Image (cartoon, rainbow, N blue to C red; front, top):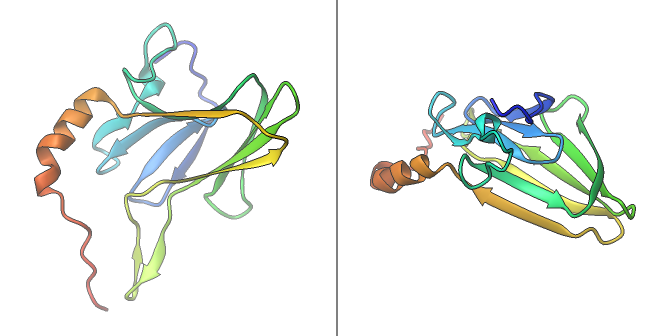
Length: 155
């Protein structure tokens, strides 16, 4: 494990997909296409220098000159909210969740993560990276022809 990586992480998931989100709003761990599959985002296990984005994979949303962050779940849900503030008092909220819903009489749990970014105060300067783990990108390129969408079975 990266010695600079904190284990103060939020969990989002829907029983088909799950991810770990750090206090800075980065997804640092997620496996696909199943929870016991190969990691897509795995910065949690990154390099010694802490600059593992792009090499070990993460999905980061950053605010320039970040001064503080806080995380909490929306009451009675698996919806995680991360609030970031910069040194000038500008702020933004990142809302992360994995949807699930009833469809044709059963619970549908797509392999989907949703991230909503909204400004709260001022005009925060935001940047982001989306870097899947390199070996997994190669494996997905080979397997794309075999991937089928989830079938919907009536009743």
